[in-house]
Length: 272
Image (cartoon, rainbow, N blue to C red; front, top):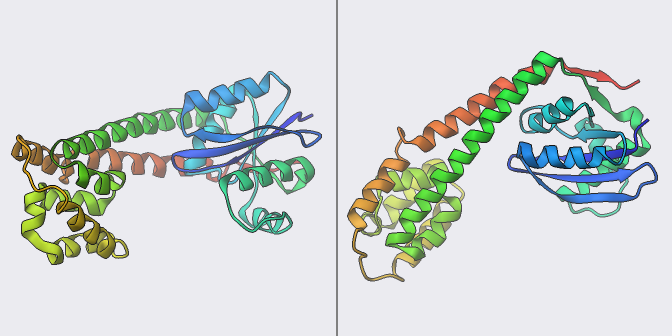
């Protein structure tokens, strides 16, 4: 018998978790990082309060890590098919789609309409493979964050204003391509708006005009060249290039996700 229904609206970097008791009382409702220690901690803590059923809205790729951890702990896992999710969502008040609302709907549906769920049964060998792949992805994600922070740090040294514009988008392919071609503020100014916009347009057609305007507005806010700009710009260019660690990390994460998906392809059965 299930005591706690944990609905998980899965995301690439963060999930949202909502836990309900059999009476419908909400005992957990918070974002949950895509991190094994954090996910394991939540599942373990909830397990001390009773038998837990974890329900996800996506059993493959980005939902693989929570599933693998739950299987490892011995928690039953199920998923709510997308069509069912949409139909049930129409019955709940509020039109705004939020992660918190979706997680609640998943948990509430599991509690009140268990017949709509599909259980996920994963063999021990598959669980081990998933755990290894997700652990590999965790390591790559940490490396990606480190590289992104390093790129932002370089840019902060030579042009803080420009970092505030490009920093939040530092890992976007368009920004990486731009820094590879024009790694310094002086290079960007010399290239001019048209060339900068054309570089951005190849990877981000909708963002190109807006980002170009922001870049050149920002470039006007700093009139001095900081000492060390040349070597820092060289480092930016190398980190942004196709042979950079960032590119390898991105490729590695995509590869890990491609290997993870087939492991869950045939592992679903209808809950009795």
